[in-house]
Structures are given as structure tokens and as C-alpha cells.
Length: 218
Image 1 (tube, rainbow, N blue to C red):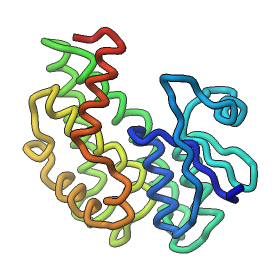
Image 2: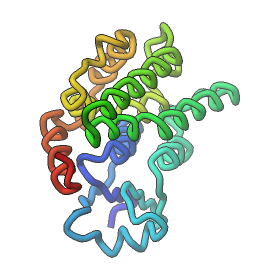
Image 3: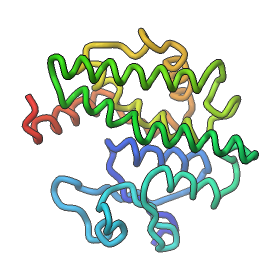
């Protein structure tokens, strides 16, 4: 058995976060795909009995849940290269933005494909406002932490794998509203550790179409 096992779903941006962090650290791991619709594995249910969700990282048999917590654990366990700033203030700021992303971004995007008409127009407006706030946090820096790709970048970049679907259902373009944030996306996607993990946007779009059908959303 591998020392590091990831219980994964290919389309989950939260699983992508963990995979990108492991790639950044150069950690070899065993990937175990979960069938979230056909029946979750006993290992998943016993490893995450509270939520029964992926990702779960097993390190030496010990399970860790929740993607942001897992990425933080990876950074503390394998110190190089560091994902969080060395100073306490910098780490606190990074955790603030990671928390903001966790609470806002993916759910706001979900509201776009789960609605239509006036409700969808409101959802698009709300999503763009969140992106503008993130763009403000990024400022003129290459990455959220400054010159180096790090913790907040990992937390955010995984969710862009769903942006194509959000844009197509909401009939808008992220680049039209947040050009600096869009430039950051392109910069991150040039990293091998990111590019090899982020799936084909068309496949994600088809996955969202499936979710809509399964949930009876026309």
C-alpha cells in the first residue's frame, strides 16, 4: 500500500487542489477514483464518516478531509517548496483569501447553472462581483502571494476548471470583466503542475450537463 493515497473524483475542483499541491511538492501518491453516483467505497465512508465526500488524503493510513485543510497539511508535512508565506501576517492573509474562495466562488458559479431567467442574471452578477473582489486581492502581483505560485493560487485555480461551464450557461466571459484575474489564470495554466491536473473544460461542461439532468434542471 502506498504511504499517500488520494480518494478522488476527476471533476471535483476540491480534489484538483490536493493533486496540484502534491505535484508542487513532488510527492508520489496512489490515486483511487470514487464512483460518487454508483456507490461510494467503504474506504471513503469510513475515512470521512461525517460528510462522505472526496477528497480524502490517507497518509500512512491516517485520513484527512476537506481540501483546504489537506493542502495546508501537505505544506506542513513536506516543507519544500513552501506554499504559504514565512511570516505570520502573510500566512493569515493567505488563509483569509482561501476562506473567502471556499465560502463564495464555487457555490456562486453553481447558482448560474442551477437557475435561469432573472435568477440566473442575478447569479451571474454575483459571480462577477466575487471575481472582482478576488482581482482586487491579486492586485498587480503575478500570484496571490507575490512572485511565487502558492497556497491561495492552488485553492482558486482548481475552480477555474468549471469556468467554461459557468460562462456558457450564463452567457458571459470572465475576461470581459476581470482582465487581471484572467491573466493570472493563463499564468497558472502555464505551470506543468497545474496543466497536467486541470481537465478538459469541455468534459467538465458535459459533466455539468449530466448534473443538471440528474437534478431535473432544464
